[in-house]
Image (tube, rainbow, N blue to C red; front, side):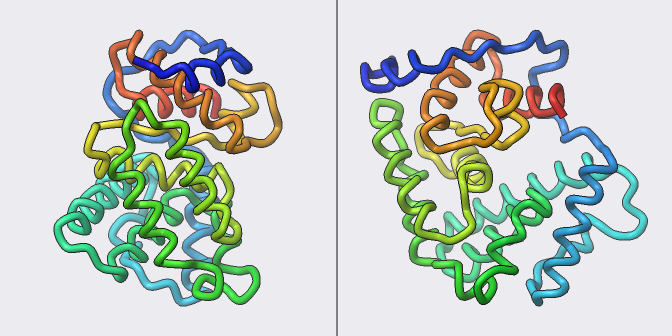
Length: 234
């Protein structure tokens, strides 16, 4: 049941979804030169700024299918989150943050390269507060809680809605106690679904509700629906 507040905000944005031929289980991101350049670009950023995570196990000079590789990274992030939930510490939190940005590619570089780099920009205390809120999200208070999370993300430089929702996506899938899954809202989905150039947090709340409703109608997960849409548009 969707509370009145959430229902009201969906009225200002009515998403028209395309017909999707392939949906059900979570598919890999489609392999492409664009994806390859994005991931390898992030590898260069990590090497340049001494971000040390084990990327070679997923991407190396012999990698051909970067779509399959990103699915393997997704699975690894899920395992890292599960491990964190049994033994919470800051080192694991930072590692998970890096892996999500590695998976997301070069558009997530700014927190590493601007205004003194990662350790000047990042706040592990704030990120932990975000994670703690994601863990206890409930449907009846979803809008209120997402707005609280937005404020926390906004206090970390260079994390906008496109990357903030990547973190929401990974943590909600594995850590939310009510099995609430949250989708990514990046520029590709914003252009093709919302007919706008850039995503905003204001767009995100009605987007989440309509994605939940569409996934329910299709008898699939929000995560699988978002991936199918991304591959369709990308």
